[in-house]
Image (cartoon, rainbow, N blue to C red):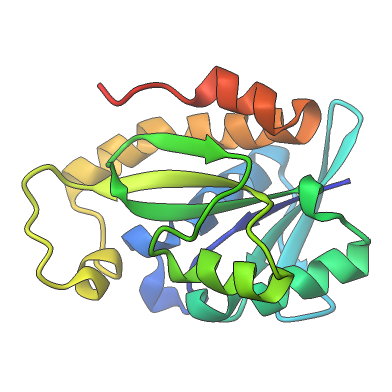
Length: 190
């Protein structure tokens, strides 16, 4: 069994924001499999799907981004999932909009949801998919207002192209592992 976690903030006012791109990816997966999310045995919502004989739990922490680790640990304990079987999907301000980067492990890189998961797990040895949200000419005087801001119409078009790729990459990770997914989906930014 694999656990694919999309990071975001749970309130509806955060829907459509750059910070909720992790939710957007797993929402796309849930919709494509026509499996709705339901409340879990912790502060999370989940949907269970099967893809190529692999059970996959899609997880949306219902904590705020900065406390995502609590929901991740609760789900890992409930489903008896090991660290090597999780993939965390989050936004990344350091990557250009419309790109993705898969890694087997690594630092939080300034992403507070990842930071809290690392704190709760005790190390950074879990797979993650970072989805780029940086705009080329965007001055970033306030990181929080930018990441919590809604996508512009142009950004929405870019996201509509990358979200299906991210969903496919999450399925690839689930069936073939992080190395295969990295080799297939990590491409240099254009």
